Image (cartoon, rainbow, N blue to C red):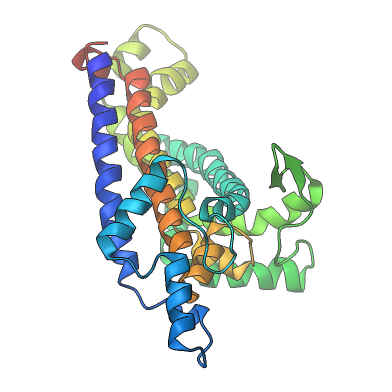
Length: 324
């Protein structure tokens, strides 16, 4: 197990290093931030002074090694637009995106797993067929359209929930969180529901397929032959064995919710990292773009590592293969 962990950490380090090269070069060839930062009537001398102050006058490889050195110290550079450390700019938006992602994934699991379990256990029931038909609709509807419809119905027509913003927040550890206030929850529900609809359909169909695959297995028949209650057979033997692919999907989808919440955050004016990255791309704020992408890379690497560790908890065979 120890050697397996060491290999996984080395692989993760190599992936992060490779991505620093790809991200930095990819971002550096997009546009010229000087066009955004310097007035059109500025003299050549003024342009050179701004370029020198931002380090844009140096060769690309020197800029990369400066970035890599700063990265090792937790320094992603200073934002061209905000004039603050890029990491600090992102961290101020991170809580909004995290609470949106956690709420959306929580909704997906709480709704998708029970519905998928029911549809798998009773595949011929009319309710199960209705659930599966609804999951197809959840896959098909575009996120931006669903978001607009949620605003029209619940904010404009019914007036139950606010259409934009984050609401009241509470400061914890120097960061602002809205899920700790009732007003914050009222602002959080619509964007979280918009993000959760596709995930519900995905988890639902995955659980349903897993149930249909596991139910005919010999160990399920043996558990029933021993006289175990149906509830114990389902929740101990069936659900535990189908949770391995479900945990994988939940982990990867959590990362994707954070990385690709741009549309939802834009529609609901949610002040998270997705909205920030759109603004940074429009303004060619390279340090913020690079810092955002590297945080997303690091997030996916960590999530994959956590998922691998959960495998060893859910499946004893993995512990045997890794020498645990």
